[in-house]
Amino acid sequence: MTRILLAPDKFKGSLSAAGVARALAEGLVAGDASLETVCLPVADGGDGTVDAAVAAGWDRIAVTCSGPTGEPVETSYARRGDTAVVELASAVGL
Image (cartoon, rainbow, N blue to C red; front, side):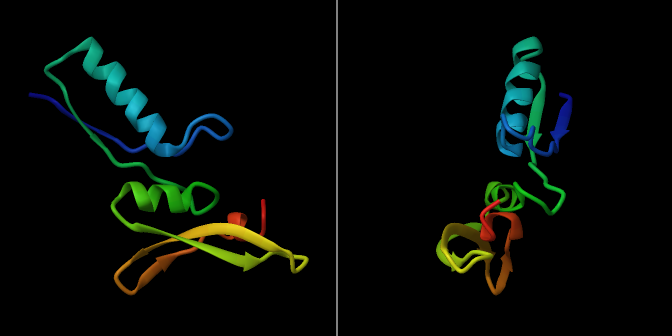
């Protein structure tokens, strides 16, 4: 059996990294049912980073923070144990 690791970043404006990985896996398996796919969404540290961490098994924590002009911004961060991943773009309302 052939195993394929799918580790895409997001397709900005259309699919999350997890969505890209799922679509690729579905297409590959539709073409060859003997394939085994492993999805590992990734991010470059910008938008989509928290989503990639959550797809890797981290917990998503919803929070309200102050945006760049002091207005409240609804966002989230990812946490596993005593480590957190914060995506600045979402925290400042981008």
